[in-house]
Image 1 (tube, one colour):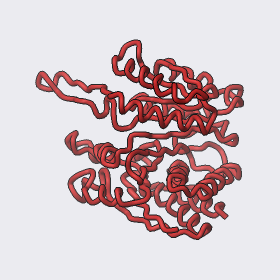
Image 2 (cartoon, one colour):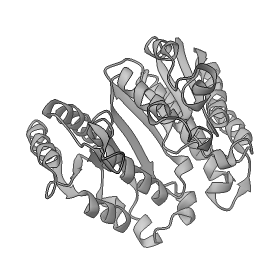
Image 3 (tube, helix red, strand yellow):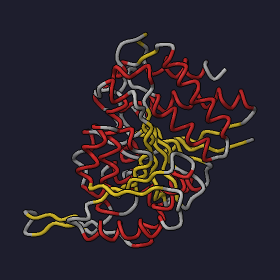
Length: 352
């Protein structure tokens, strides 16, 4: 089977972690008799340097024509002087919008061998952590009306959602719950925000089509508290854009390292976008100490989206074996210390 994969290495540690993930994908292709064609394109700060814009049209066209898009990370202080409309992060928002990627899936799982790296008590961790954050990705405050008034002394950003936007992301969450433990926790701030009241109403309407799935609601502040108090109570967390952004980062710290958590962004386009949830970490770029595991696991999520499920499980098992064997990048705590490149090689070797 032949698949075309666009690689957006991006900025900071992006080229390092995507390189490791590509090595794992190449080994997977050999093992299972596939051909993966890698098409490297520019997005983010590197695109600003080369083309003057964070998201060139040729990058968008290549992504739309691909079977999947693997992203490293974008941004860094180098581009802080860019006007707001031309910052590297605008490339990320732009590709999500161009590909219609409205659903962001962010799993958070505890590896038993890394429990010591988690800030939670063993008595909490022993209950197990397996949370799927479902974040609405192209609506809410990040995409609402914004502006400056009073000669820049007043600024506003608008939280806005339509019924259709809420309904489609809610369906994603409930469909996922049907394959997991059949529980959805919807996060909002309905005691204050009108947009959250609409969110809650539509989620309850969608829930009627899934009688096997238990639904409960939490205000976002309570959800943040409960996530560290007892993460085992959560199965699928359904969140508006900004709340999902924040809570998924909190969930990453529960697992012990933000370098372990992948994400997938899915929507109306065949090609989804697959990336680690962390940023470009320019302070450690080029030092070969970044953790590529989140990007490797994002590559596995990409294969799942291509219906290459056996291949995706092989990558996940290889990661699990690598961690069980004690291999660690610096962010993962005590163990057999390796760099980014070597971690990628070890995982690839464990593909078998």
